[in-house]
Length: 119
Image (cartoon, rainbow, N blue to C red; front, side, top):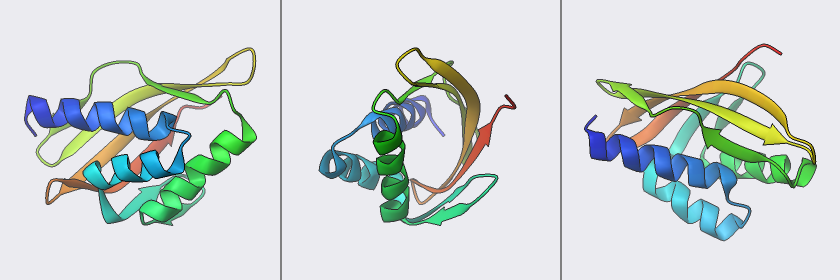
């Protein structure tokens, strides 16, 4: 993955997870995620951009202060990339940390693995 592709992926992925407007978010998702993306969490698997966007809607519904931020630049290897991040929640920010691992196929994210650090 070249530097420009990594930069675009990091910027757009961050924008997707911070976008409260569903129409804008879904348009952003179409630029980087495959329609049938699979998102893997330790407790569930989501399939498709609609399911991922529904999940983001639930995050905002549960916490209007939800904010997703990269903590260092994305790194890549072949058709994969990782992004370390933090999530701030609540009126007095509670910080959660973790990493997303992306598998890119046909220039779009086909698989998104979410790793949350232990609390």
